[in-house]
Length: 223
Image (cartoon, rainbow, N blue to C red; front, side, top):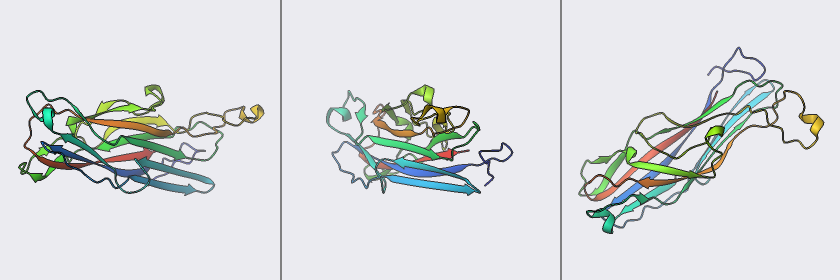
């Protein structure tokens, strides 16, 4: 991969971390999908004295979390309503780079791949696949759209849907001695810290009864 050192604009770098999130959907039955925790992945790059790293955490610290939706009772009848999944998932993206004397842009982007859909696992659903576009989310503990954090939205079934974007090289100073904070030095990296996503299944289309499962992949990159 090509690199862009923080002190020059002549070279470019990109680091990416990828983590899965599983979704289980049970229609017309009360079923249990056992969660296995989640994923934290860190990739790093060293160029002379400039050390960069990017960490992505989806859910808890190991394995793959499973968000489950149970569509049963009245929600499977003539007047269905949206079904909230459980558990909610916390997303953290933490870029790391050295203190630098310039504000060279370090774009960080979070994308999701929901292209595979939720595939029938058991029951009378045969080869039915429910698109991930039937699942939306709301967010809490978000830094807001102005900071480039995740906003409430919906999967679109694409391989590279962008859901967050921010500049890691923010000119932020957290050092208490004021004189050390003067000038154009970049002192601290912006990050996304435990933005919580609560997922909801639209339940607006009739699908055959059964258990469905699919996986969404989150990919964070820093350039």
